[in-house]
Image (cartoon, rainbow, N blue to C red; front, side):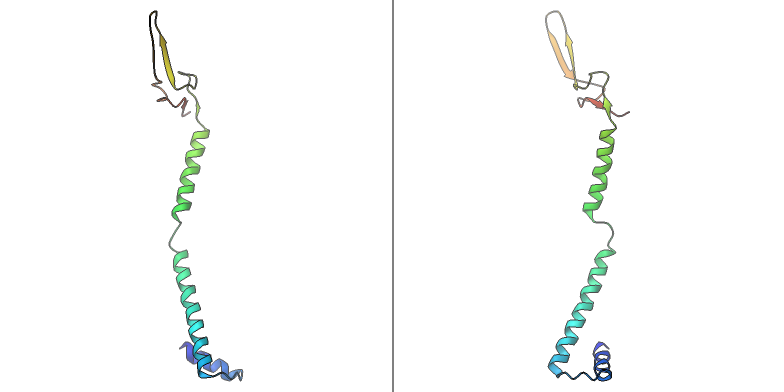
Length: 103
């Protein structure tokens, strides 16, 4: 079909080519169309994993920006209990040691 179209196009425009030149042009044009079809199939494959990961990271960053300082440990992430003869330190139970809580 492509070869018939090219032959007609060359005849209408009075373009003279050898059979070797014609076959090479037909192969190049067919390769071009094959490449275009393959590229279009990639474009319709949906969003790339990188784009999905970026969206997820942006959500997590926004959530992290909105966090507030933990009122229980004042942002240290640790609770220190001082006794008369000893002291004990543990992770804050309210923020799990991060120092920040969701609003």
